[in-house]
Image (tube, rainbow, N blue to C red):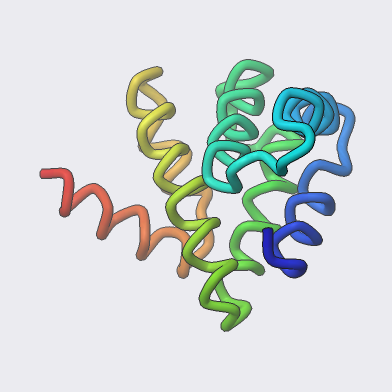
Length: 122
């Protein structure tokens, strides 16, 4: 895992809701590291398990961190965040019937990717 990606994941997971997800993934994948996109998708699932409200504190924090990553210029990080977190969010929130609320909560870079993903999926 690239150092900047692991650093982002650790910052994102520095919350009572997501820390156990990172711990479980690390334990499960040892001695290797968990796949980044799978881990970020697991974070999304956990956030949605806790609350279907994008304004919930943990979810809002994650969305802000994701937007910062999307605007970072680090192509590897942007790719992993886009495919793991944003596409995972689109899929899971859509399944739960809360996609419009989550799309509205995304920052501009995250929203552009979500919209492009929705268009691509058709």
